[in-house]
Amino acid sequence: MARVEAEFFGGLGEQWATVWEGGGVALGPLHLAEGEPFPAEGSPISRALRRLGGVAGAGEDEFAALGLGRYRATEDWLD
Image (cartoon, rainbow, N blue to C red; front, top):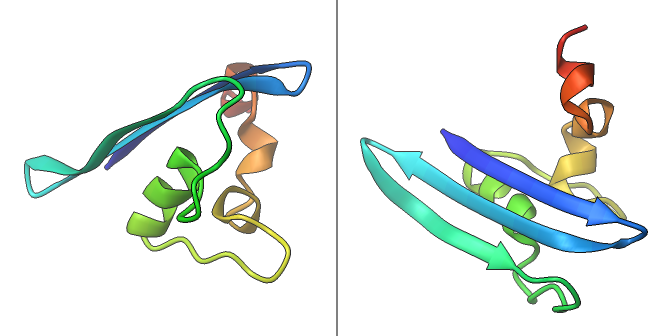
């Protein structure tokens, strides 16, 4: 199970992610502060999704590869 969060406005923002496995924390908590560059291993959200089995293709990250862009706003989950 993973909890991921992103808060962005005008292209600037932050990310958080934690992954649990077998009742314990398996990854994180990870945090990327506003203005901080993505580390070589990827953003917190990409790393969490990768830990859950997400695979990105060429030119995309795990978020895009899994089609999660359609759920960017909480209201989108209700449909």
